[in-house]
Image (tube, rainbow, N blue to C red):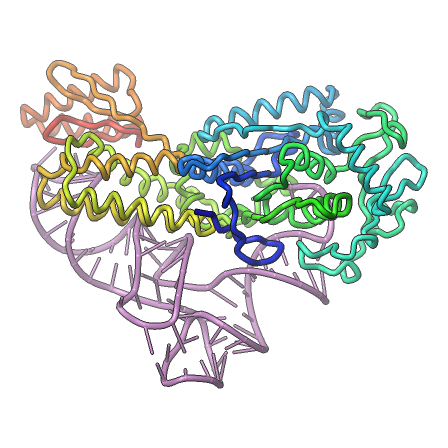
Amino acid sequence: MSISVRDTLSGQMVEVGENGRVGVYVCGPTVYNHIHIGNARAPLFWDVVVRYLRSRDYEVMLVQNITDIEDKIINKANEEGVSWEEIVDRYTASFHERLEKMGVALPDVEPRATEHIPEMISLIEDLIESDHAYAPGNGDVYYDVRSYPPYGALSKQRPDEMRETEKGTTSYKKSPLDFALWKASKPGEPAWESPWGSGRPGWHIECSAMVEKHLPDGADIHGGGTDLRFPHHENELAQSTGAHPDHTFVRAWAHHGMVNFADTGKMAKSLGNILDVERAVDLHGRNALRMWLLQSHYSQPIDYSEEILEEKRRACERLLRLSRQISGSGTSSDLSERLAKELGERFDTAMRDDFNTPEAVAALFEVAGRAGQEISIHPEVAQEFASLGAAMEEILIVLGFDLLEEAEIDVNGVRVRYEEEPRKETLLKVVKREEARRKKDWAAADRLRDELHDEGWTVEDTPEGPIVSRR
RNA sequence: GGCGGCAUGGCCGAGUGGUGAGGCGCCGGACUGCAAAUCCGUUAACCCCGGUUCGAUUCCGGGUGCCGCCUCCA
C-alpha cells in the first residue's frame, strides 16, 4: 500500500512508499529566536505523519535541519554582543524545549548547516564545473539562474517576468535573479575556508547538500511552508538538479499553509505579531493545539484565535473522555468490533489520501458518537467496547494526543478523580463540598464550588464522586 | 504589475456530478438539588453571472472578494 501526496511541483498526486520506505526532509528553523505557533505547524504535522507511517510499518527517515549560520543569527549576536554560537545554542535548546511541550519527537537526523561545509563546497564545485555557477572573483559564488531553463517551475513563475528587485545591487551578479551559493566573509564574521577564499554558505545550498547526504536515494517528500516555495525551494531544486541531473532530488513537494491571526492576519517575526509556542501551550494545552492543526488540511492556511483554540480543546476532551470510558472494557461486542474495523479503515483511507487529517479526525468523532449513543441507551454495554477502545487509543496516540490518564484518590471515603493533580487545599475543598452535598447543604456546596471556580477549577458531580479539572 | 491558492450553515472545516462529512455554538428535551458532563432531537451552507448536463456546490468561462508569493520569513 502506498501513500498519495499532492506534489506542489507537478500538481499531481504522487505515490510514495511503495517499497515500504519513506524519506522525508523538512526545512527546520533558523535558530535566532523562539519559535512561534506558525513555526510549530511543520514539526507538529510531520510528527503525525511519521507516527502514522511507522504505525503502518513503514521504514521512515525524517530529516529536519537546523539552520545555524545565517545573517539573522549574526545580526542577533552583534545586537547582544555575544558570539553567534551562543545564539545558536540558546535558540536550539529553546526549539527543543518547545517540541517537547508539544509532544513532538525529535527527527531521526537533525543536521546543521555548519556541519556540512565540505558537502556544500563540493556541491558548489559541481555546479561551477557544469556551468551553473560562477565565481566572479570577489570571493562570492553565484548560481546562474539563466543556465537552468526549468527555473521557476516550482513557484510557477517565469524568470523574465519576475520583478527584478535591485535591492543590494551586486555588480558581480550576471543577473539580479542569481543568488549566492557562497558569500565572502567580512572581517569579524564567522568564516570557513573554501576554494574561493574565506566565507560562509548561502542559505539555500545547505538543504541541497543535506538532502543528498542524509537521503541518498532522494527525498520521497520534501516539506516546508508555502512561503519557502520561492525562493528557497526553487533554488534548492535548481542547485540539486543542476549539479546532479540524473539523480532524483525530491519525489513530492508538500507545502503547508501559513498560520494567521484571525483578526490581524499573518504572523511573522518580521511583523512582530508572534505568539510563542510556549505561551500557546500554556494557554490551551498540547491537545487543543494539535486538534486545531489536525482539523484543517495541512495545505490550507489556518487562523488562530483564543476562541478557536478553546473550541478545539473542548472537542478533544469529548473524544478523550469517551476513549477513556471504554478503554477499560473487558469484552468486545459485535458493535465494538464493527466500529473498530470501520474506524481503522476510514482513518487509513484518509491518511493515505494526502494526509487528510480533518477527515481522519471526523471518522474518530463519528464512530465515537455511535458508541456513545449505544452506551447512553444501555449503560451496561460500556464494558463491551474493548476493541473500539483500543482502536481509538491507538489512533489518538498516532495523532500525538496526550491521553491524560485519569487518576483518583480516596479522601475520607470520598473518591476524587482528576487528570491534573490539584493542590492539597483544593482537594480538601472538593472533599468538603462533597460532604456538604451529602448533608444536602446546597448553599455551602454552591459556595465552595464558586470558590473553586475562582481558583481555576471545575468540579463535576457524578454518582461515583467528584471530578476536578482545570477550568 | 506578474504568479499561485481559496471562496461551503452563527463560527471552524472536509468532500462529492444526483441520498446535503465532522466539530463548536444556538434552541428544545432526558438526566441532575442546582450545575457540569453525557445522551436524544432540532436548526442551518455550498460568493455572483453565464455555459456543459436529464441534473452542478462539485466541470468550463467570466466577475467579485480574500489570502499568499514575487525581499528575510514556517
